[in-house]
Amino acid sequence: MVNRRSDTDLGNIIKIKASLLSIFRPSAHVRGRRAPAGMAAAFLFVGSLCWSRPAAVLSNGVLTVELGTRGLRALSLPSVGAAFSVESDSFSVTFGDNQSVVSAELPRPRLVSSNSTHATLRYVGGATLEVDVMYALGPTALFVSKALLLRHTGPASLSRDVTRVTLFNSTRLCRLTSGSACAPAGGSETVRSHYGLKNYALFQRWGAAVGAIFTAQNPYLDPLSADAAGGGVTLGFADAPLVEWNSAEDGPTLVLDSGFLGLHALTGRTLPSPADPIDEAEHEVRGGLLTGCRRGRKRAEPWYHFPNRLFHPRRW
Image (tube, rainbow, N blue to C red):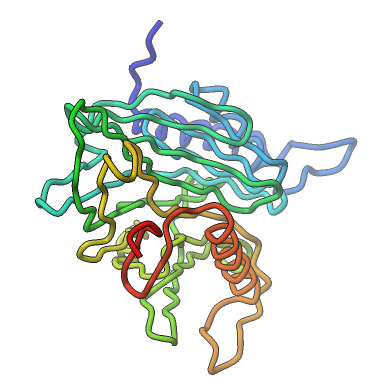
């Protein structure tokens, strides 16, 4: 039987499940003791899996990620008892001829591969273009990575400039609770480089206990912002040209810089001035992510930043 429920319907089911669980929370006991608040959040996340069939579930023992029919649908950080729904995990790619591929306008993708820590959704972006959205969890990582792979499927060679990439487009995190069922972010902080680069990380917070980070492998993030209404985050990078893609020279596939979405516990301690007004935990997460990106790029990535451009080594 084909499951024709939309991600919106599935999100509503999660919220209903959360409300029902709140009825039973006061009587929840473990060996005669009241169950901790974190257990209720874990029940909410597991409940979502029971009420609807996810496309894939990734877990590294620290972070659990649920994929729906069009990408990220839920995140859970059991160590702090936090579970989140994810709305509008969409992307877009713009080429030099002003043509764009927008995931929300494409047919529903198909799941082409998945295991406990990796999953790939494949979109058909035109007669000769496919877009793979690759999600991955590293060992003990507190974040999930999202990378776009463009694939030219036509018989003739292709030469195009990629001028803008949006990895997250108004993507909204909502914390599942036992009361109102879903709470948007209470605030956000965008971190900008002090050395001539652009924005490179955006933090969202839910009280003083838990937060989220949006960032990317590319340090020239433009745009990187959260709307005031519901905290929807848009993250991308643009330049002219960002990438020169010639399928005859570079091959039929092109992997673009990864985006990252992570969760972390907050310490409640803010860095003193003149540092950015972020929590000590946010500073640690940001530093670890950026260091990992630099090391990973030197070891394995064929594309390199060279100020405000990405050049292929063969063209230097």
